[in-house]
Image (cartoon, rainbow, N blue to C red; front, side, top):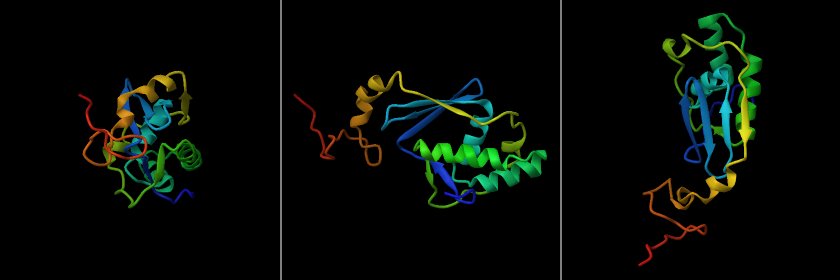
Length: 148
């Protein structure tokens, strides 16, 4: 992957929520969850729709004068390595000015946790086919009929 490669959130395997300015990402297939720093959260929001680290860095530099190219490339590489992001099918449009308005300073980081992995992997959501109609499917991909 290069800094010019657009990446997107690895949906439906990855879900995210922001709490008090910090994102928590859950990888439903692996059971890992991640905490992002405020800068990581801001960059996740900019990258996840399908933008390249280089395009985001250019937009950030134009809006704030900050050179974030190296930090963004490293952060994006970590997202891809953890399977939180994948190459995007098509690039997303440039970020809007309001998306760039209040970028926090600091290093974009993510921290992985595995302490709830067993619990997350037992959750029945892992037996749902999130790509189709949501009907439960077995690990082999065949539909699971409700038990009587």
